[in-house]
Amino acid sequence: MADITVFKAKKIITMDPSRPEATHVAVQDGKILAVGDANCADAWGQVSHDDSLAAHVLMPGFVEGHAHMMAGKMWDFAYAGYHDRIDPAGTLHKGMTTIDEVIARLKERADTLPAGEPLFAWGFDPIFLPTERLNRTHLDAVSKDRPIAVMFSNFHLMCVNSAALEMAEFDETTNVEGVIKDDANKPTGELQEMAAMFPIMRRLGIDFRELSQGEGAMRSYAEVCKRAGVTTVTDLYSQMEEEDLDTMLRITGADDFAVRIVPALGATGAQPEVLAQRALALKAKSTDKLRLGAVKLMTDGSIQGWTGRVKWPHYVGGQPNGLWNTTPDEIFALCEAMYKNGVQMHIHVNADEASEVSLDACEAAARKHPWPGARHVFQHCQMMGPDQFARARELGICTNIFSNHIWYFGDQHVALTIGEDRASRMDAARSALDAGLNVALHSDAPVTPMGPLFTAWCAVNRQTMSGRTLGAEQRITVAEALRLITLGAAYTLKLDDEIGSIECGKIADFAILGEDPLAVTPETLKDVPVLGTVSGGMVHLV
Image 1 (cartoon, rainbow, N blue to C red):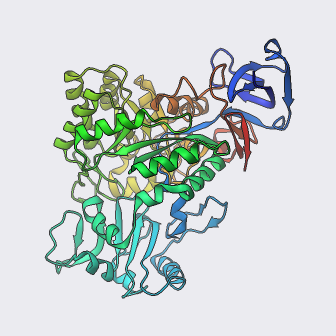
Image 2 (image 1 turned 60 degrees about the vertical axis):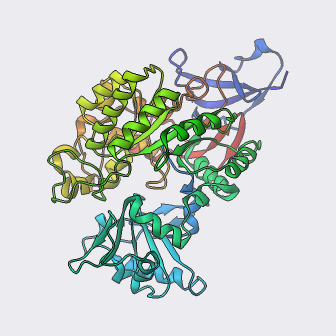
Image 3 (image 1 turned 180 degrees about the vertical axis):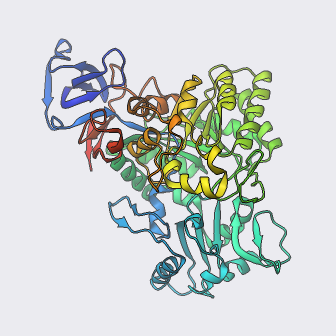
C-alpha cells in the first residue's frame, strides 16, 4: 500500500453534508482516505503528518465548468480591453478607456513586429466607450499596410483594418451575414459572428485550435487555473485533432500537471451523426486528467454585441435581433443525434430566444430518444426566466450561469441592450435554484478572468461596476455559491462522484485559501486569497 499523508489545515470546508467541516484530511494514492481530526486515518495503518498547510483553509478544488484553453495563450497577443487584467505570469495589464488609448497600445505593439506581419489584439469592447464604434479607419491609423484584427472581449465580434478586409475580399459587393456596412455600402471593418469572422481569421493565421492545443497553451492554462484555485476545468469549444489528442494525453499524464481538463468538441458545421460517433470514440480514450466525450453547440451570439437572439420586445435600441451561429433546424438535428447516441451536450444560450429554441429541440429529441440521465447543460442562461427554468427542470437539463456578467456588463445591459426589467433578472441563479435545477457558475475565461471566488461574489452580491445592486431578489447565499463552484459544477460534468467535495473515496483535489470564505462578509468574498491547489494529493503553490 502507498504511504498515507494526513494534511492539517486551519479549517477544511468539505461540501459533505455528513461532515461539513474538519481539520485534517488523509490522502493515499491521490485519493481521500479519511476526513476528520489528526487521528482520522490511524485505523488504516502508519501515517505521516504534513503541517505545511496548517495556517490555511482548504476547500474542494474549484471546478470551472465553462472556460476555454486559449485563456492562457491569448496573452501572446496584444491586450486591448477596458478592464485591468492579470496574465498567467501574474503581470498586470492596465485597461484602456478610450479608442485613442487602444490605438496607441496597438501602435506600440506594431512597432515590435516584423514588416507585414499581421497584428492581432483581443479583449476590446465598444460598449464601454461613449464614442463612435471602432472601425477600419481607426485601425488604418495604426497601419494601412499591415493586416490588423481586434477580437472583441465576447469573441463573437471583431474589427479589422482595410488591409485585412482586402485580404478577405470583403467590399461593397460582399453579401455575408455579419459583415457590417456603412451608408455607402462599404464594410466598416466590424464583423459579427463566425461566418463573417472566419475568412479573416484563416487569412491572418488566427487559429483558435492552435491557441487551444499544444504544450504551451496547456501549461499556460494550468497556470491560470492554479492561480484561481481551479483543479478541474473545461475547454468548452475544442477543435481537437488526433495529433492534438496525443499531445494532451502526454501533457495531462505528467505528475506535475495540476489540473483535470474536460474538453467539449465544437459542433458548428458538423454532421450530427459524424460528430456523435467522434465524441463517443474520444470518450473511450479518457484518462484520470483528460475527460472526453461531450460536445458544444453554439446557438446565438452575444447580448452586449447585439448578436444574441432576444425574444420580444428585443433590444431597447432597436438593433436587429441577433444572429444564429447554428440555425434552429440544425439545433434540432444535432440534439436528436446526441440524444440518440448518448452524447452529453453543452449548449450555448445567451438570450432567451436561443434558450427557447434549445428547450424545444431537447424536448423533441427526448420524445424520440428518452435519456433520463443525460445532464445536458445550458451554458450562460443569461435571460432564462422561471418558465424556462421550469421546462429545463422537467427535461433534466442543468444550467451553468454566467454570473460575472452582472459586474462586467450589468450597467450596460440596463442602459443599452435589454433594459431595467430584464437586466434585473439576468443570470438568475436564485430562480434556477428555486426551480430545483442543478446549477453551476462560470467565468467563460478569457471573456472574463477565471476566478471562481469572484464569480461566486457576483452571484451573491449582484453588484455592477457602478456599485448598484442589480436584481437583489436574485442574490444567493455564500454557502450556495460555494457549492455551485464545486459540487454544482462537478455535477454538470458528470464528475460529482469523483470531485466537488472532500470526502472518502474522492480525488484529493483542493483549493488552498488564505481566509475562510464562510467567515468573511459577503461583500469581501472575492478578496479571499487563493494560495494554490492540491491536485491528486500533490501541493502546487502560487
